[in-house]
Amino acid sequence: MEDAFHWYPGHMAKAKRAILGDIRLIDVIIELLDSRAPLATQNPDIAALSNGKKRVVVLNKSDLASKDGNVSWVEYYRENGLNAAGVNLKSKEGLRSVRALLSEAAAEKHKRDLKRGIKQKRPVRALVCGIPNVGKSTFINAMAGKNVVKTGNKPGVTKGKQWITVSKEIELLDSPGLLWPKIEDKKTALYLALIGSMNDEAINTDILIEKLTELMKERYPEILEEKYGAEKEEGVGEILIKAAVRYNMLKKGGEPDLKRAADNMLDDFRSGRLGRITLEFP
Ligand code: G4P
Image 1 (cartoon, rainbow, N blue to C red):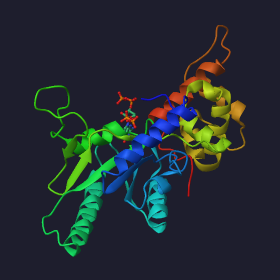
Image 2 (image 1 turned 135 degrees about the horizontal axis):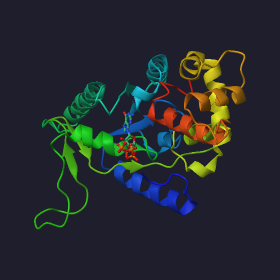
Image 3 (image 1 turned 90 degrees about the horizontal axis):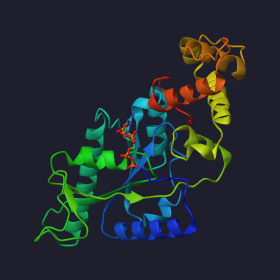
């Protein structure tokens, strides 16, 4: 995982040049987002960078996000004129829908080619892109299956861009396009930090836990009740004490260890052990 925190202008300019170069080679951009926070994990510049190329939005890590959240995000992107599909790359759920969207793109391309007098069916070429940690490498590996390309300096193997054959209709560039997170407001920074896409020290754990608990009180009170025995009227402080007791994280003398409990709660959220939690809704 690249360190999302060190995005200085030089890095951004380099990433931008790299992605612009790749975009020239492809027909379709596969934009990977995190289902728990799609807007926070989306770089808004992609619309301009894509330069009219077809975009397919893939909402990954659907296993960590709530089912109703997943449905509403796919609808949101479709209503905004983009092709979208939710996937869980851990179980490979949803990959078939992505393949179907790419096949559609291939058919459209063939039609365009025919109009230009090109009869031969050529595969669509796609680039996977996204900010760090959204699952780009996992996606490429899952799509590649056994067709992983052999790169390297072997004689006869050309250096440079390598294409993975996904099917007769689809080819994927083997290295993803790295986009930089665009942190324009506090909410975006908070969501990126919560899902672990920003350096841990960027926002204090106490603040992360406070915001996560507030959000859960509003959207997922049943999880707080089930996991920690939290009651409706209880505040963040009281809930954290209950969490420490449930986790059996007590200091000498029996006092709840709130720091350890907060770290543990954050880990449980990130790994999905806390439940399926969507942070932002359309
Ligand atoms: P990147 O190239 O965009 O930076 O992301 P990468 O594929 O490295 O994936 C980042 C992390 O997200 C990995 O976990 C990966 O396993 C996990 N991941 C990818 N897709 C999914 C998904 O659909 N669901 C869940 N729950 N996790 C997913 P890691 O902790 O870095 O490594 P590991 O746990 O696989 O060892």
